[in-house]
Length: 136
Image (cartoon, rainbow, N blue to C red; front, side, top):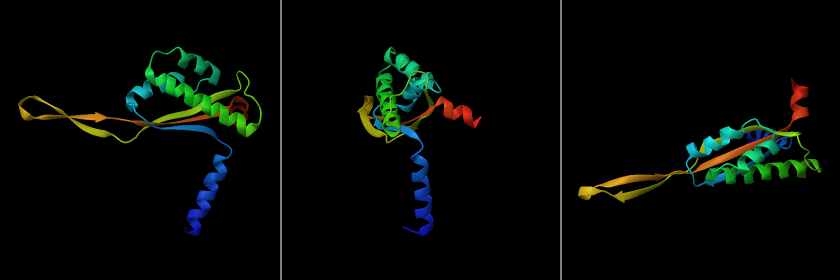
């Protein structure tokens, strides 16, 4: 590894120490369906978002709820204390496309229709409200 690349990698690792996040990779649902769930909770306080996700009837909501609980646990592990109500919020959450499995389905007259089984990656960042207020 070159010196310039090593320096930028170390700077990126140092910046990650101040961020609290969780990643969910290769979720076997389409990104469009996952974005519907993610848009419901973007920018929200975490315990309120957990309530919304718990009572949502979407299948992707259970996965996002588990991811949010993981991000909260990561925050608690780095800060060595429990998160209080109203302290944490979802600073950013994104859904990216992952690999697509391509399959063929038999069709009339010897043809084949393509089936695309999509998957996605979800990245969720949490942050404290007081930290955000001091920057503004």
